[in-house]
Image (cartoon, rainbow, N blue to C red; front, side):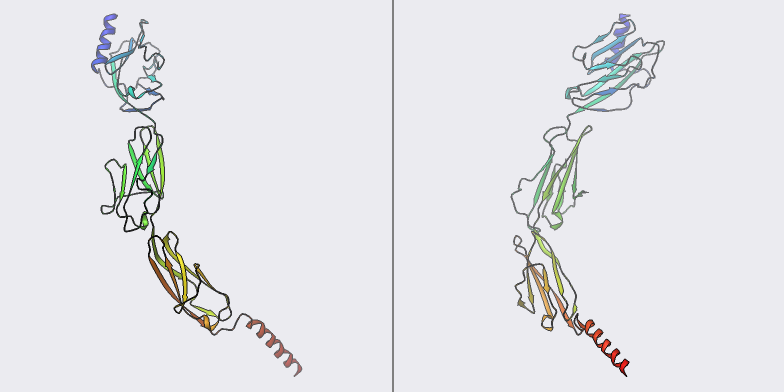
Length: 329
């Protein structure tokens, strides 16, 4: 029997196989501090195996024989559980040093020896994911500045990095947006207005994942100006003209009527009661204090000849008077 055990262990250590592998295709992944299960493909049996042996990196750490000559390496005694009906093995309290090839050799009663090999990769869970900007204090101006963002983790084996902007995958563009080979660094040169926003980086490995976020401020504009309001207004009504522009930071506003400063410095120009004197060209001028850029747009407001808001009342009185006159005729 001792000769049989020695022969069994020799097969395990040498990695020889009799028939197909009794372990599924790997590799198997586990988290440091966690547990994994090496499951064989054997069906549970009521007839005890003649022998079961597991080895790691050429060193036998657990054996079981039908004679009761069991052996468990002292370093694994508190960390392993063997299912004697299938030969499957649970390994607990994983450490990074547990990564490597595991070999199993099982001799069922009345059958040939069966073997299998499985690679185990143990990963440290990712913690402390972050996006950093080495030039975070620099003022970025669209079309003039460059930016670099770095995605990393405080601990853990990072296998992949995925970048997103405002929740959407961020794709490279050969002329302006590029990544380092490991996607750790994001380069933008130059930054444009569409680079302003929230960036996310998802770092992951086989056992864990974390997402970090970073708000990147790109100063731009003013651009895409417009004035929303009527181009014709009846006398006596209230008129609102709203000026808008894409700009970071928000711009300052200034209104002029036919070239004359109106002293209105808000985005909305209000004509409380339309009169002929209010007709003309309204110019909205916006300034960005950071980019030092200025832009303006114009809308022409015409006064129509419609009656003022009280004309309906007047018409009603006149119609009543006419009606009374007809009745007296």
